[in-house]
Length: 126
Image (cartoon, rainbow, N blue to C red):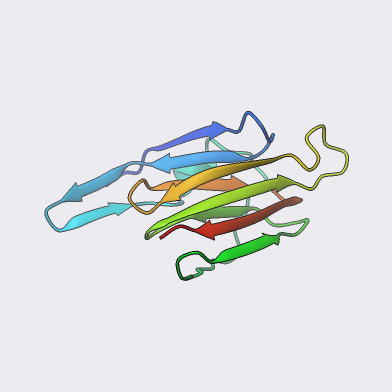
């Protein structure tokens, strides 16, 4: 199965991308890819991932704004639903302190790519 990605840059925060990949499903369930070399072809060249993290949170948990100045983050929700918030923390940016929210759902296979110097937080809806 070859993955097909779509990518759309945020109209609010430059450098933030909302992504999705194709889904293959049958009577057993479904499968989708969150990252492969095909994704690198449509995004900025400097992206490099060194490790992977998962968070499991209960419903109504809010994980507050966090981030750093060197890491790209590829955020997805593999089960349930979250509201992902991205805040521009780049002091020289025209959109400094502006924010945008994204509805991520395990059933939608959508992701958000967050560049360095952006804060991110999420609220667990399910």
